[in-house]
Length: 225
Image (cartoon, rainbow, N blue to C red):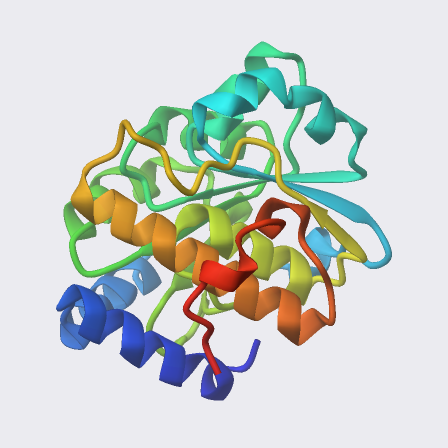
């Protein structure tokens, strides 16, 4: 995903949520103070089936989907659910808002963590990222990338994981632990889930693909160009 392709979608995200681009850029620059160049070949999944594990309650009953995949990219707390089921992850994708100790533990064991900076998580970036083993941290932003902070597309932890897998050559994406209509979430999280759905729809069209997680939902999605 080139930033030139992502930028118009990012503008829509900013407008819909009322987010401040300058705040995102500041967070990116703070993360850049810590992030080291990352060997991107470590995430190569060319030709493989990648499970994009989401954090919905349904994941507990779908861990076998992740276990059967060649590669597992997991969003935030999905890592803990998979760990309880004995399923290892190959990449954790997080904005540090729920389980930073899990992220630290993974980096210490050599598992990559895509740590994301955005406008309202600067305190978390400053508190947690310096405690990680930075050799295993991939810094990401939703703004324009700089230095060792990358942008592969995506907005929520889950859909960013899908965009990462696409960038690194995944042949097939599966989606255990996803619920776009989770009744337990608040208004802003519901709005973010709607955006995750839109972004996955956009991604599958860019890939010429059909994601099972969107079956029965496509007609109701406000498509991105």
